[in-house]
Length: 399
Image (cartoon, rainbow, N blue to C red; front, side, top):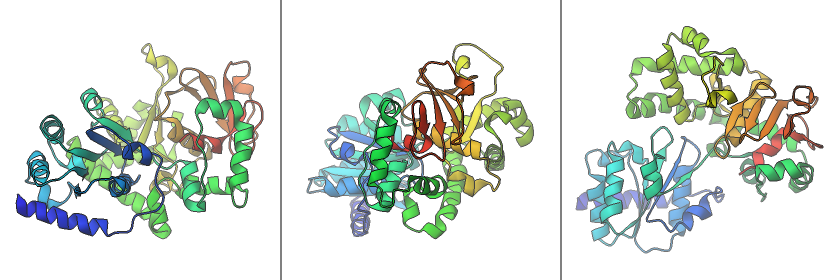
């Protein structure tokens, strides 16, 4: 074990010598100030979990620190508990464990560390893995890292600082907020930046090599399908092509054009299996699964709405894109983790069982939602809204 510890220390020194981005994502202070013995960070591939944990580790005021990644071969046959136990015996005070889902029995290993070892631990894991169950939430401090928001994209690309706002604050003061944000921009052209964000802005690795961005997204998709899902939920390799066909159909169709029955025929997957696949792809953050609001309470023959996880996936999966679908995808991607989203017969979305939203272009009217309380039109191609008409881009400032 001492040889493995020495190798891990050497790998950490190499990692530590790599230059980290100056920009720190919005969870940085929460993680840095976490008082929990064990703190977990989860999210999809490419959102910057490793970078964020390395930034936190660098700032932590401890003498003996270590970073390991469980996708390294040295950890394939080693008990994680035994490794951390030995590191602690040699004076280790804090350890970051990246890609913890690569360890098959990681839940049990983390529990043993929590119960028996006196060490501060951070770990990261894929959203494809069930690491947010009740037991994890009770024992450990868990944080979710989503894709970049428009606010973060602007901060990174323009080297400025901007505030985030709650949904209630945006709906009640959107004209004032929009004015303040636009005044902070170097050229005051929010719609230009918003268009960029829709195409390329949701993963931090865009800023590493802009020319290879779409290629990297395609690699991420393949890794999720052929590695994460195959290993985590034991999907056989021959079923992966069916999942890719499912993603392609969602990419090229309007959300309500695809009933489960139609999708099953198009992909050659039985309905029960299709529901399981949709759950897997949602957990892996390639899809959003939105149900009709009344289906929460009773069985109804209403189709579900399926969206790609974010707007940048369109360029990696298909050429024919529907602007209406892009707009709805953007809206859902910015709200889904902090809010409850259903679709409804009047308007496009019911959020938190309170607000009704109709999504469209700048000329979208209130005709479909007139006289409905707490209803809003969300308009693309609009810098500043008025009344209950809110610019779509503002929902990129929720975090």
